[in-house]
Image 1: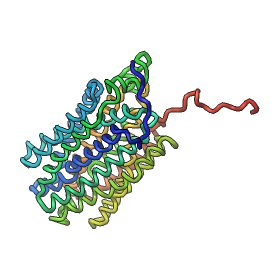
Image 2: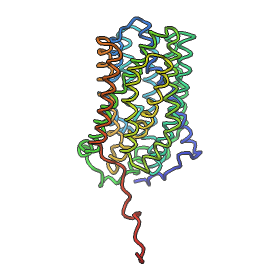
Image 3: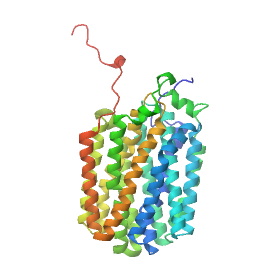
Image 4: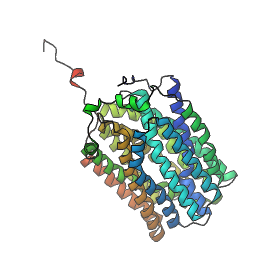
Length: 418
């Protein structure tokens, strides 16, 4: 077995880490077009809120169904960079379909393909990160990943908001397709640290004879509790901005793309500012306390969306989205690494958590879309706020701490004179 990769400083000037920075930047950059801009695009094409909700739910449903198989696929594939490249190509095809054919069948197909790409990209990038920096630097490096992803999302939102406003609504998706090219170049610029990334990643955990079985990982109480928390968080969160985007489109008309861009830039600025601190705080005070702080922002945001109608106030409320996004973005792969320590099944665990994300997002966009259609957006936002409060309660009551305890060899010992 090859030796485990030595932990690297998250800010080290090693070329592979620089390429990882750019990979996170460009993935988030091109993914921006698949968020609320889809709601604006389809609203302009005379789709109803219910139809938009179905289209978004197809994406979430495919993401949900493909998560665990995709995680297993990334575990099986020796070169994690190849997995990332496959995911990026799927994003490009999805964007071109949306730009060329805004009819129902092509849109649903594009949403399904995009859901598949997400299932591949998330565990692939997390596995590449764990391989390159090791477990000791993983938490802080996740914060750096989130920072570059947030900057990428903010830049992408600004570019796509301008393209949608001054060119055309479909220009958003042409731009997303073009942005896959520098992302693929970042993957190409990231040479493996060892002859086999898969072997190095396994070496960073435990010897095979000490690895626990898949079933024991899947039944781990920490994983099940965290997955439930993520389901509730996504149920409360996923539909909020698309629903707000529909309302903004009705109020602002042709200026909606710029307002939606601002709604994306504000939380990403918050994520970029606080994500490295989230990683350090999770190591210092534990995962559970940090998770609770992030979840508390969600019901507050739902209440604000339910009670304000002014676009500037909606943009301001997105600061809370940044708080939750910073916490969840860092904690998901970090908790997965905690739960799978000594198992060699990190990507499978990421797939299970991704399944939880898909379940929550599917329910969110479907239920919120129907509530908004039948009873109005305020009722839908209030329902999402209630779900957010339930997520907070679940963290308080059912989520155990996953931060590993120091091994006995590094535990402080009393002096002989004590």
